[in-house]
Structures are given as structure tokens and as C-alpha cells.
Image (cartoon, rainbow, N blue to C red; front, side, top):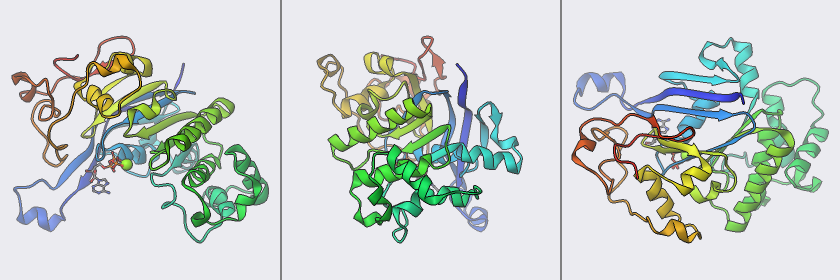
Length: 324
Ligand SMILES: Nc1ncnc2c1ncn2[C@@H]1O[C@H](COP(=O)(O)OP(=O)(O)OP(=O)(O)O)[C@@H](O)[C@H]1O
Ligand SMILES: [Mg+2]
């Protein structure tokens, strides 16, 4: 199988001080990495779920993938081509190939635009010639299971689930090969969450689109993802096939995430662990394994040097000195 997306050792760095501030205050850092050394691979036609707590760097990584945030280090390849080396016309073409669903579906929709103009807006932004707005919006509404009349509505007239469908329609507007969905089910009732995930799955089957789904709730992607990447403090700490991550989570953080969103599966209840303390700041990273300050299995080695990210099977890799 070919990879549609490949990230290697990606860092996204943000400034925290002005140049003048940095000059006068040398004690605190001038920048920090919201994403550090992140490597992930997404195979064509598959769904990769990116999971981690708030502040882990998930949205930042998504923005880097869609080309909206610059990377400081590492490489991103889309369909085998390095995005940092693309010419302007290639960049436009690659951006068109990725449909992006923003976190906070309703908030990201302009309140004064109708659904029809919202879902066809990407075609205008990308100056696609000869677009028949009516036809395109009918097609998109149909794909996401909204009736034609929704075209005339405004965002405030939509339920959470309907707004999410509009977000999906917008992401589909330019026939993407990859959809990046940032928290597509956040804030929805459980039944509506299922509907949206099923919709994404069904579209993936029908249109052969690859998907990167971002969530903080591991159980949300249990039945709808092929692979899972667990993110902590901007790093990927464990990655593997979904079935393997659920049946044999090895990184203590993965275990903790599983414990935090209990599953109905009785086998999973045995190894429950609870995390202590707050998630550290990426501005002031702990030494050694950056998870050691919260890890219930911490040993002396853990705070000394960072564990390498290593494969433990053909499909599973993690960074931990004492995997479960
Ligand atoms: N434009 C920015 N400038 C400076 N810092 C930023 C910027 N965007 C994000 N950050 C910081 O980077 C870190 C990662 O943020 P990010 O939004 O990527 O996390 P997230 O995993 O998407 O969280 P959530 O689950 O809450 O959406 C946070 O510490 C955040 O404060
Ligand atoms: Mg986010």
C-alpha cells in the first residue's frame, strides 16, 4: 500500500517573546515546540486517529499538515512529495487535495453566510473555474445527508450535528484525497457522535478518501480507525493498529487514556490506571521521558534520558523504558 501522508520528526515552534523581550530577559526561552519530533504515516484509503489530551499539539500538527502552519524541523510528504520543496502551483494543488474540518464546527462557520455559500466557498477561495454553485451544493448536501432546503439556512439555524455535516460538506467541496477532521464529534450527544463517525466512514468507502481524525477520546475512534497515534506534549508516544492499541496498550499514557474513557469491554477494566498531576507545559519540558512526572510506573531511569521511539512489533511502536 502507498502512503498518502508521511511525517518525519516534525517540529512546530511558536515564539513566546518579542525580539526585544528576548534581549532583556535571557532566563526564559524565546520559543517552544508545540509539536516535537512527531513521525506518523497514513496509508492511502485508511483512517489514522490522532489522540491526546487538550494542549497535546493535535490541532497544531493538523495545521502543519494542511500547510497552514510552518514546520521548524522535519519533513511532511503528501502523496510522496515533500511539501517544503513544492512550487507555488504545486502547493495550491496539494492544499486542494486536503479537506479540512476545523475544530469547533459552528464557530468556524461565518454567521452571515448561507449553508449553500459556506459549502461552496472552498471552490471560490481556490478559484475553481466554471463552478455551478447550485449543482455543487446539491451534490455536497446529498453526500452528507442534508436535504436541499438546508442550503438556504444560516449557521445559527443548525443543530450541532447538522453544523458538523456542513463542515464535512465543506471539506469535500474540492474532491479531496485526504480529510483532516479536528475533533469532529466534540460536544455532540453520543448518538449524534455515532452518526457523524458513520458518515465519515461511509464517505471514505464511497469516495476512497484517506482520513486523519483528531480526538481526545480514544473510544470514539475504536471502531472507525485503522491506526492510532497517541500524542503527549507534542510527541507521538505510541502508534499502532487500532485493534492492537486496544487489546495491548503498552505505553502507560495509552493505558491512562483508555482508563479515562471507560469501555464496556470487561477485559479492559483490569488494568485501569489514573494519572497524577497536571499535564506539564511544553515551554518547560520535564527531563528524560517527558511523561515521567505523571507516570504511575516511573523509575529512576525515566527522568534521566529520553526513551527512544521503537517498534515492538510489525505494526506497533512506542517510547517507554518499561512498557506494559
Ligand atoms: N498560534 C499559537 N501561538 C502560540 N502557542 C500556540 C499557538 N497555537 C497553539 N499554541 C500552543 O501550543 C500547544 C498545543 O496546542 P494545540 O491547540 O495544538 O493543542 P490540541 O491538542 O489541539 O488541544 P485541544 O484538545 O484543546 O484542541 C498549547 O500549549 C497551545 O497553547
Ligand atoms: Mg485542538
